[in-house]
Amino acid sequence: MAEQAAVGRAGRLVIRNVGLMLSGDLARPILDADTVVAEEGRIVAVGKAKDLDTGDAATVIDAHGTALCPGLIDSHVHPVFGDWTPRQNQLGWIDSFLNGGVTTMVSAGEVHLPGRPRDIVGLKALAITAQRAFAGFRPGGVKVLAGAPVLEQGMVENDFKELSEAGVTLLGEVGLGGVKAGEEAHRMVAWARKYGIQSTIHTGGPSIPGSGLIDRDVVMAADADVIGHINGGHTALPLDQIRDLCADTTRAIEIVHNGNEKAALHALRVAAEIGQLPRVILGTDSPAGSGVQPLGILRMIAMLSALGDIPAEQAICFATGNTAKLRRLDAGLIAEGRAADFVFLDRAQHTAGRTLLDSIRLGDLPGIGMVVIDGLVRCGRSRNTPPATAVPEVVGG
Image 1 (cartoon, rainbow, N blue to C red):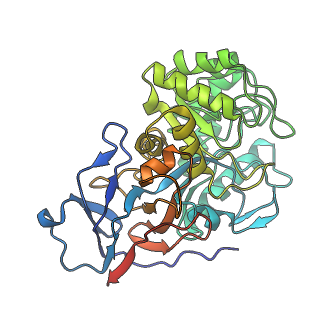
Image 2 (cartoon, helix red, strand yellow):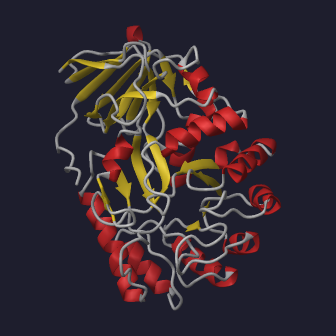
Image 3 (tube, rainbow, N blue to C red):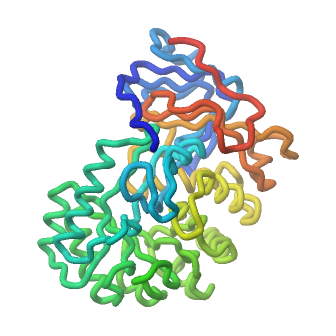
């Protein structure tokens, strides 16, 4: 099992000689900047080195001309306890995602726990336990936002009030439990929203025993905050229903790795046609029956850029700034005041792409040279991506 990330003060961090500054902001995905300064895990300045105070740094990283990107956010994971997934009986899966550039994960429900309780007392206890456990345990430094109860019949408004007061901020996928009817789901989603709990709904055919078909009408009636795996997890809805969910709602359009790729591209194209790309966010929907995908978010970025005709710098925003804004996170953007979570990227060795962005547009994965979370270096050259052509280096501190 992955070790708990070392606890320490980040101090003052200076990142210099950045060749390409990827902001994570869809409105301005590339910044005219080469330097970032962070203090105690938060960004305090972004710009040109000549214009910034870069002195007295506890840590100095020379990017050596590589790209700097906000840490990637996986909007849809299914953790259980620690860095172990019983679904695949695999240890260290979260640490592997760190090596895929993921610095934040959002739970869509701890549904793979063997014997998962389905009574109301038990499901609330599980959610609170998961929230507490991952608040105190960060494998490799990755932030896992967990404690997402799955709705069951018989829940009342006070249950959501109690969950909120206990620190729960998420609902697991609506439809994975006993609540599958649109009207019933709508009532509970509204209670959750009243108490500041964000909701996600399962979309498409059943994925695990106990789940069922959640079609367009149920999704629209429930009105959850996030249309979970709009491209199916795994089985997608008909394309006309996916179009309706994009065009006739205002909720987040979540596209996942463990779904239907044709449906993913369809959802992306519809979102682009109707001017709703800011609603597109990415997840892996893992661990699941198809396994663990440490590079799943990078693969989604490359696929959507290469096959969906989206500039690579915009596709990266789907997994950073878009998700941060829609999930109400303080990461995901390279901007003052945001968490100092970064991924250093460069084109993979021997890619046909002339630049990092060219290589992603061709469908190649980038190489990761370093990952920083809360201003602390968490890993160097990734053990999972293809080797980057150039890598950053800690040169001071």
